[in-house]
Length: 406
Ligand code: AMP
Image (cartoon, rainbow, N blue to C red):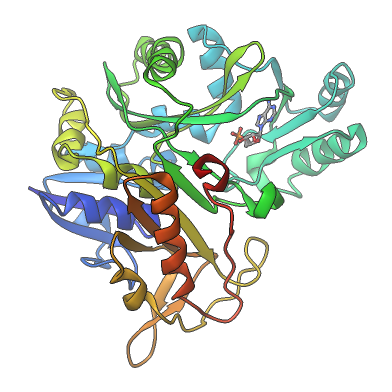
C-alpha cells in the first residue's frame, strides 16, 4: 500500500514513521527532516490512501476534493471538520447529541455578548468561533479583560474573520483529558490516552502554545473512564453527525475536563493532536496503515492495540516562540540524540541548511521522544536526548511528565 500523508509538522513525521512499518509513504509537503517529503500537491500524488494531518486543509475541503477524484481518504470532509472550524456549530451539535458540555451562548453583537458575560460568574471564558491556531480562547478571572476580548474579537482586530462570532462559556475547573478516537462514519475505536502540556514554561506558567510536550499512557485514565468517554461523548457525537448526513471518517479528538460534576466536553478537534500523536501512534502494535485504510473505507474491522511501554515527547522550540519565533538557526546534535537507545526525534519546524544539515524554520522545531518500560525511564531518555541538541535560543520545558512519573 502507498500512503500519502498531508502536512509538514512533527505529527506528520510521526504518522509517516509509523505508517512506514507496513506501507510505502510520501509526505506532502513535509519538511527537510522528514524522509519521503515531496513538493507535489496532494491532488497530484498517486497513492492508495491519503491521511490528512492538519485541521486547516480539512476545514478547507481537501478531503472532499480528493474523494471526488476517487481517492481513499482518512480525514473528515468540510462538513464534519466544522466541529473544529466553528465552535458555535460544535456546541449546537453537542446540545443536540445530549453530550455534557459547559453552558454557553454564541454572539455576533457586542451588546448581547456583554450582557451574557455580566450574567456569568468567574472564571470567564471567551472563544473565537473560527480557527485561531489554538490562541482564540481566553480564560480569565477579570470581567474587564473578558469585556475587552469580546470587543477585540468581534471587531476582527484580534483574529480577523475567525473572531466575528464569539462563544462565551461557563468556566469549568478540573484536570483535562484528551481522547482520540478513529471513526469510520458509523463506529469509533479509541486510541491510547495521552496528556499534553499547553503552556510554554515549567509549572504551567507562561503563554499558551500549540503544545510543549506529551506522554502516553496516562495512569489516571483507566479502561472504565475511556469506555465512559466513548459511550457518553464520542458515540453520541458520531450519531448526531450521521443524523445530519455527515459521514465522518477520521480522528475525533475529544478534549474534556473532569469537573467535580463529572466529565464535560470542552472541544473537538478533527485530527490527531500535535504533539499527542507523537506519543500515541508509535506505541501501536497493530497496523496503523490498515486501521486508517479501514476507517477511510467505512469499515473498521480491528481494535488498535498498544505496547505497555511508555513514551514521552519534549518539544524543542525556537527563540521567541510562541509570539515571534526566530528562524534560520543551525540545529546541532540531532543525529547523536537519535542514536541513543529508545529515542526518536520527529522534525516539526525545520528546513534544510546550505551545504547540508538542518536549520530552525518554525516555532516548534523538534519533538524529542523517549520510550521505556516506565514513564520515568521514558522521560529520562527523552531529556538525555534533548541535552544533546542545541541551537541559539532553543527553549523547552523541563517538567514534561514529571508529576506523573514521580
Ligand atoms: P479549547 O480550544 O476550547 O479546548 O480551549 C483551550 C483551553 O482553554 C482548554 O484546554 C482549557 O484549558 C481552557 N478552556 C476551554 N473552555 C473552558 C471552560 N469552559 N472552562 C475552563 N477552561 C476552559
